[in-house]
Length: 627
Image (cartoon, rainbow, N blue to C red):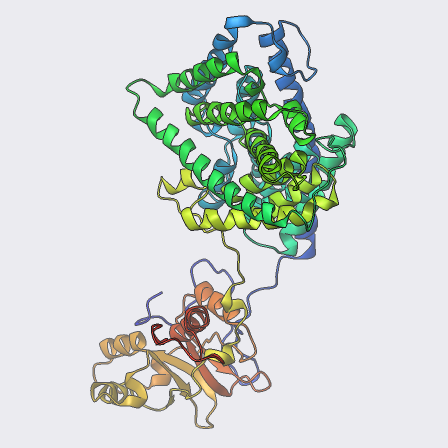
């Protein structure tokens, strides 16, 4: 829109609805947008979400079985889809070669299939939502789970959650593309697929919903929340039917020692925050080193997998998903020396493998090494403070949730997630405390990115992850409108108006438009500077009246309407200002809302956030006063 020549009479090209003409009997067009989507649209999206949830649940089960099949083929040379742990293989030194074979296959798939299969999946889903109008190519839905199954089945130290989240999101996006949906509806369907994938993988329906809200939707509205819950619930039901109803990890009763152990949890929060930042930087540093290699990127996953194979030869527990090892850690069944080895080896194997550009999830392997770190912390605390009596399993669980919560900046999700996978309510308090402390440390050292968004930030795609209500949806037109209405009589000539502007008459010179009043003082139109220039070009003598030169088909607003509604109508009709009229008497102008009025609401929010007001206590002389 151009504030100089904008015309209130002209609707935007995108709008196909006519703007009604002004008459004494018909009200002006108000600034309220057209009605929200009809209930049947919500119903349609919910039905589609239900179908997506069922399909995502089946796909998650199929991926689980596919990983089992490849693991059995490569490590045990047998045809079986039962899930087996690669750490129990008997390949000897050949265990070094097997991951490299899988890495080479994934490299070829990424080169000649789609590069979107590289990485752990969630950043790619975020990119589709934020920068590609929630459109994901069909081949991603096919190649991502296959590539992940090959990478994990050949020993990759990954989880299945990232790939299934991206795959579920791709399914939701494809459904949205197949039907006539809006970009917002397609985003909701993509998020439904991602939430369903997460829920079906870990049997965590609540965390799946919150993950989609925190990392994909960045909103909390009924239009998205209802379909999300439906998709997540049905996907979890599929998981229960196919894989059982129990939690992901069977954890024995654990003493979280609240409130006695609070000082130790505070210290653990600091350690988890530093660990989250350190691992994030390590992962992307390794990625940078692969970028410097003077060979084709086809070979990078194979090279990373070769490094994994070497680590796996000495520490077999790093191979594969490692759910069994995570269970052992949470139940306190590993000695501290083995915990140290697992923590260092798994973190190194994950950084080398994922940094090489292969396909696999980040969540489960991070859980393993961070849980090991928490267990070590509890054992060391018991050694140096014998009266502490801390449970290694309890601290392992809390660290497991806190590290990834801080690294991903999805703290609420992983507080709930860690609770859901164990079903132990006593874990909630320490999880909350340690997670938010760790998140604070991550915010301090990584203020503009996370392990999820760093990849996008490096490509110039900045992701704003903070969620807040739009101030325009909290302010009324009456709060920022000009109450001194700029008006002009309808019989004024354009020549006379031009003369007043040339003389810088303050009543007219500072406004981009003037409201036209008829002989009875009622609103009959609006004239902008653009209208004035065109009228003078057509009628150089300036005898045309402002009523003839201005617009008589008006878009108006009311003082009790939200500024967001008024601003949306400005955009929709390509106008730069709106007359504010009395709702009971729509031809009575009581105000004027321009762009400056819209921006005033944002200025008020900035002032509320940054301007410090006088307090009860005297201000310290060294602190400058707010301006």
